[in-house]
Amino acid sequence: KIFDQMQRFASTLYKTSRVATLRNVRCFSKDIKFGAEARLEMIKGVDVLADAVAVTMGPKGRNVILEKSWGSPKITKDGVTVAKDIELKDKFQNIGAKLVQDVANNTNEEAGDGTTAATVLARAIAKEGFEKISKGANPVDFRRGVMLAVDEVVTSLKRQSVPVTTPEEIKQVATISANGDTSIGELISEAMKKVGNDGTITVKDGKTLKDELEMIEGNKFDRGYISPYFINTDKGAKCEFQDAYVLFSEKKISNIQQLIPVLEMTHQKKKPLLIIAEDVDGEALTALVLNRLKLGLQVCAVKAPGFGDNRKNTLRDMSCATGGVVFGDEADMFKLEDVQLNDLGRVGEAVITKDDTLLMNGRGDKADIDKRVDQIREDIAASSSEYEKEKMQERLAKLSKGVAVIKVGGSSEVEMNEKKDRYTDALNATRAAVEEGIVAGGGVALLRTIPDLDKLDCKTEDQKTGVDIVRRALRTPCHTIASNAGVSSAAVVVDKVLGMEGNMGYDANNDSYVDMVKTGIIDPTKVVRTAIIDASGVASLLTTAEAVVCDSPKEDKPMPGGGMGGGMGGMGGMGGMGGMM
Image: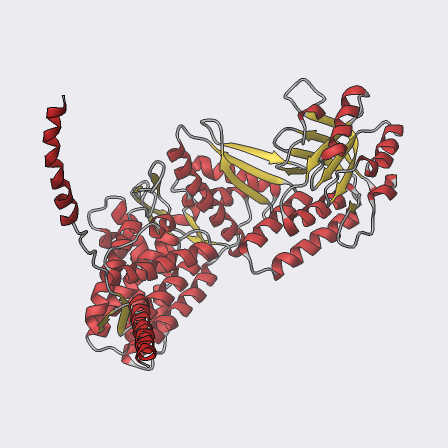
């Protein structure tokens, strides 16, 4: 009995200690702040982030250097890149910074540019909003007033908007977005002229000191020949075919018996054969290489590009463009052994290097290609994944007008990365301008919406306060641009622009007052609209917060240091080893 009681006691003790251990593991203390104290800490974080981002605004904005955990530091003038990199030690300040960081991210995702303007607008609304709420304003009514004012601003911006029609206007939009770099504006305008407004333009690292524009006509993908023995020319170590047949297979080809019928057919026609499959290996690859070397058979094998569904869709696109069929798909309707000559695709020219394959002048039926293009467009509209949309846009461009690749040059990786950020911003701004038109730049469009706020009907005094704060916030982009240009009194510049009419505004690059649209200082309507909507949404929500909860900072316990020192004391006895000599 005593033994049983001891066992039960030991079991209970173990369970109790286990529960206590689990509680210690799972429970973390929280730090909570209320009212004005919480808002004060958050606005400090908002200020730190907004100050770091605001220095990049305008043609005379400065760069920000970002330390990286590996590699060289990054130098950039891109607002969202700066915002993403900021992490503050104080948890409450960090919450404020992260919420404004979301403003920059949202603007970047929707419009691709205007992140700095969105950040300074959000700071202006949040900061004044916190002050008013601390003095007793109702946060819910205040937010209603802000949203009422923003709706009116958006309506006014749409009235000011002018559609983009000429390559010159596209160049101006890109130049302004790239902080006044005309070479970037010219290259993007030229690229859009070649591939059209809906065409695909990609930005990549170049290998020279200069920026270059490369047009890829036809279908190019980043897979080269499987074996170097397929090379048939001395120049450039590549395989070149004229008027070639193309065999497409979704499955791996390992058995040479599967390929014998198609090899015999193409050999009789004295035409080259290009095989694009998931892989070609084993005896099939060995037999192809031997026939190529000993009999001079014109053949080349290439792995299909991409993975999973993307590979299947790309193969079907290529088969459509060349007039062939894809063997080995899920339905398994077409077997390689039963291949007919009309099942193969045809291309006017094929160039295969160790890294990529280019198919030009496909002989596909125009009606089938148009049908395939419409289907891809429908898939893009239905998709919610940005990654999938990007891949489908690339496929669409390959089937329609081709792809323009801008290769960014530079003397170092740091310089190339900085320029790449500006190219990406300029490209996004240009697409936004084509989509919704343009308005006067330099913060002028927002200033011109201020008179429209006077006619708003506010039901409470707090709603009126919200409208007044938006009215003052609309001045900040122009103020920041003038301040970064070194103007001693930026507020005077803003007042002077407000006293002017139409598109007249301040040209920070030349320190003069000009017609912004005629001078080419223009912003895409979508960028300005997105900036004010995102800024007001997050900033006004921020002001409605009455309590902030976050994890308590963990205290680092000091390492126990006495044990090692005491243990080493015994080494003193080693002095006696001298007697061993």
